[in-house]
Image (cartoon, rainbow, N blue to C red; front, top):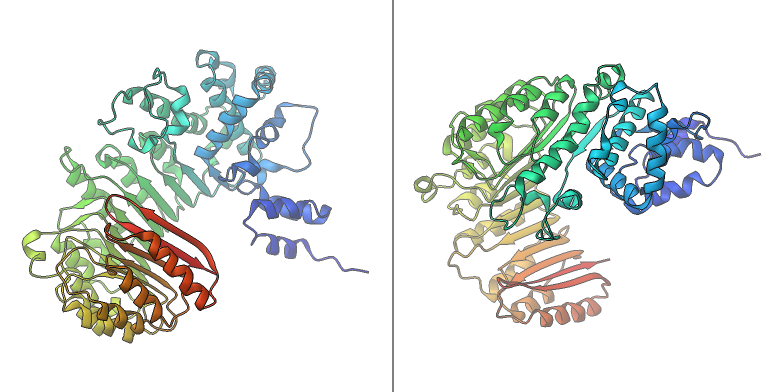
Amino acid sequence: MSSRLPNECYQQIFSNVQDTKTLFSIIQVNHTWCENAIIFLWKNPFRKEIDYNHTKIIPVLLSFLKKDKNTFFDYPSFITHLDFDNLFRITSKFYDNNENEVDYFMGLMEQDDTLPSIFSKLEYDKWPGFGQIWVIILLILVNMARRRANIQWFKFDIRYNDIKGFLNNNGKENDDVEYFYVDDERIVGSNVEMRYNIVNKIENIITTFLNLDDFNESKIFFENLEYLELDRSSFKVAILEAFSMCKNLKTIEIEHPFFQLILRPLVSLIKNQNNLENIIIYGVHNAYMADYHDAIFEIISSLNTAAHSLKRVEICGIKMMNDETFKFIGNCKNLEVLKLEDSYVSIKNFEWIALAEFSKLRSLELVYNWSNKEYVSQFNPIQMILQNKSISLNLKSLHLLNTYIKNHNLLKSISENCRNLINFTTQLTADDDIKYLFNILGNNPNIKEFQLLNPGYPMNLSTGFIIDLVKAFPKKTDYIRLVHIVNNLDEFRKFLENCMVDLKFLYVVVSTNNDINEFGECVKRWSEERKKKIKKLDIFSIPSDKKILVRWE
């Protein structure tokens, strides 16, 4: 007789399965497997694998309107992840393909006197198509709240392609344009106001749900939320204000072109958190807008209230001109990841980072940033950070690509202080960098991923350098990216011939005067000689350069 595992064991096993196809297969084995795996299949029903969850989940989530029919499981109660933009896409597709079924559910809704009173007042016929989609999503949220769905993860990222069907543009819009560019005035013929109005109505689904007067369940729907991501939508004020009840967020990820417009609700949300661990902020360079610098300072400095719990800070596309912006960073004793990208960072803010004691910092990524021109012409401010041994000694991942800032003695400081790197990215800006680069490779035998860029400074990168470089790679290195380091096919051939590491990934960018197809043939021959099976080989030619990407099994 075969023994039956406790349900807890099945659930522990199935919790590690992320693939939807596999979960579908599991629930078809037998009843025991089904009842324990269905929980994880429905944990995130609005995931991006639309081919598999697709529109069939919509009737299931609306089945509560059919008073005489029950589903096999209490599906809404299993939901913990609400990918709102994907819910909108699935519902839109369901409406497009099942208008009769939509009319049927609308009829059931009008007869249901147990629903919040707002449903008896909605004039959704005034917005053909969009109105029905709006109501269906609100019904689904109400059903999820009734069934006590424990929402821990929420994402809102409506794109232009999601709403283009609801815009009256007379064919003027380009179908390939992403909604991200909705605020770009350079788009010819786009009706920005119309787009904003549509997105605002979509956001109103959330705010309407949370403010239902006669439905208390909505007030606690997000009380256990841990992950909040608000990306490319045009407005966020109402959503941020609506989420003010959340106190236990671990992650806030937000993207906005005009942070001064959402300053108050965003700062309030940050300050309300008990144990915020991750903050990711994406902006655009619009410092010419009124109050921009004050808003950025207030938002970033508000992180001081969460300094005790912060583990990850990522900031991209922001100008940090106020010298006190990063004054709080020294209080982040548990920081593990720090990333600054495509941002202006004043010298004083670099100093605040350099003075901090980050004994737990594992990843430092400073890429495409710039600072005071006069200062960086003589000194690299990042060098101060790497000279701090409480930061450099424990680093596992170090990415430094700041093409507007010369290295000066940066690589020397890395070679003297870093010993535990696994993932390393840097640039060469002078011949003196080369000897320190080799020292870094020698001092860090565990480097697995290596990326090197030549941003265009005058240097003597000869064939001899290429041979010395490939011979210097630690034995564990299997992932290499070289951008404008290899000059021609002969150097590429020498690189491969002298390569002693077991490559799994190679990405090389060369100038346009090379025949990239010859690079591809060279890789094929070398792989055959080394008995390495190519999993993927792509070559690209664009106006600025040519590229080859190879993956081996």
